[in-house]
Length: 212
Image (tube, rainbow, N blue to C red):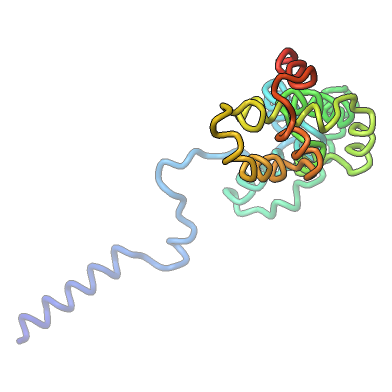
């Protein structure tokens, strides 16, 4: 029994030594983790330029990207990410002044690209707002948009091969499903019905094909 007791005591003793204190475990960094440098304005500026070289961005979206980067680095060094908010503001303002970030131009480019893909005004507005573009900027850009939802719905229907672009034998059976697909994409019921029920040989539906 005494021998067994020593074994048990030795086992628990070795576990305690191997684990170390809870404070030491919290302080220990995961092995193999890349050492991150503390945020600095010059490094954040380089990160912003690298990101903007690859992606279009609104000012708010760029702020979110830099905030995530700062958050990771600050927490690596056990610092409060809020202490570096001034650096993020400075870099974003620098990018705006230089013209690398322009919310108006970003929104206009997104609207043009999304219209070519057959997206509705409602869907485009939601996508722009999710990127941090101000509501008044979104409204102004969409007000000047020359593509109607009807044109965009025809493009969407052609891409999805629904409505007038579905083979005749199955068109009637899939009518309700096709209407629902366009409505889910943000088009009004009236617009969806017009596109789904139109004559596939009409000039309007042919024109939608020719634009793609």
